[in-house]
Length: 400
Image (cartoon, rainbow, N blue to C red; front, top):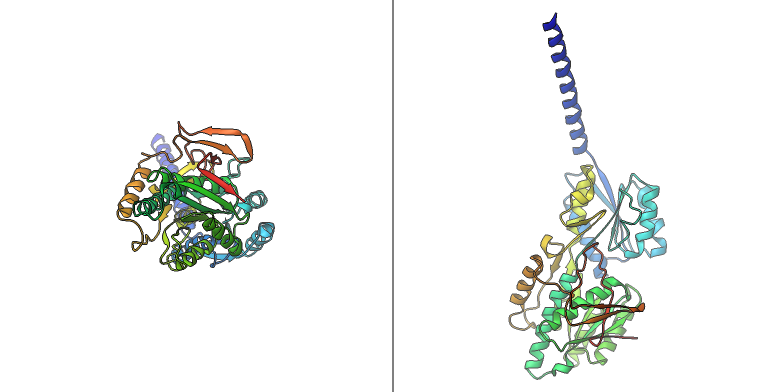
């Protein structure tokens, strides 16, 4: 009788194990058959380098569709006040995941995430994921200050060459910057760019002009032209069109000594004799990993290689999120590639703190908010979105 009971128990346990194994295998098979439609919301189109940089990630996702399990859809040229309509349309079209590509979409995307808990919302460049967090709302951004800093080194070496050749004096080593808005994202970028240049030419200074819009070819052109009239000899930008590059090329054709440093994509094709280099965030690293997580029903932040802060993640050169684009070897100064490579390796190994030195910064929105950079400021320590928002006294000038 006792043996019969033991046999019965063993049989029952075997049945339970077989049933559990069947459920696990069945569940695994279901995950392997999961599909998702991913909707992208863009504030521009392919003509804008910023938007095209995201489109490249969408195209890479289309090419690597996880065995036909992923489809994509997109809405182009969506202003902030039309973002809700665009996102709702994508959800109605069956999108189970929304990639929102503009900072201005952040509040809308998070509000809709609360309304549609079954849809995963991934918002680029924003910083609101960890305030009243939602499990289906995420933010992400590459630590682009690193690329700006290396771009600044390229600019600094060109400045040094111009000084050594007598084209300009040390006091004329002035950089120009076309910025969209006086946001931390823009301020952090141009500060890193200047500090990269000053690591080569300590006398370098900068003039910044804002367009107060992300995408306006006309306004960016006017700002770049004004910066050249201000005496700037190298122009860079955190704005969405190629206008500053075109302006530099036109100025060079008129005999002026001026160069350009780009963002989001190489601009050598429109400025072959003036565009030194460009840097960009490679969004595909996040997009593909996040989609893979959704297909496998895993938390996105556990599947993305980067620096995780709650429902936010970012990375720099170390994970390939930040990249330097074509170096114009015909016009950059000798040794530039080696200097870039060394700086990138130092950044990967965290052997350099970019925002550090004998500088005092002032918050443009609050003059009482002042920072001394002698001890340094660790950018992206708490979030992927930039947070450095101080204008350096005596080396950076904001002009209207």
